[in-house]
Image (cartoon, rainbow, N blue to C red; front, side):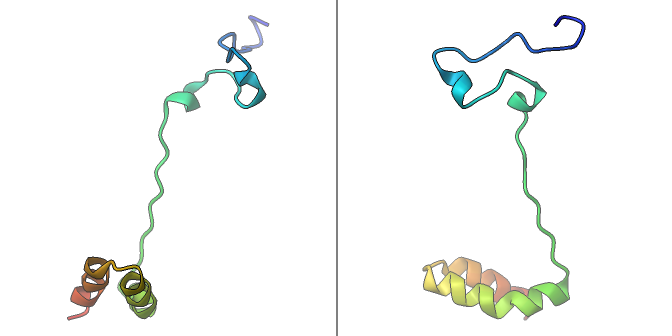
Length: 69
């Protein structure tokens, strides 16, 4: 197992039922990024403002409106 790279840092106290051993991924944080060009945002602007207003997020709705003034 030393030559094949098996991880020797394993969860204890029953944690191995849900989690594997430590790896580089354990210490990384993933991020999601979305990009819209102006035409794509224009196509979604009505949906965005409708959802934002329904959820009481007026600043989000206003942010989209301001981009098209």
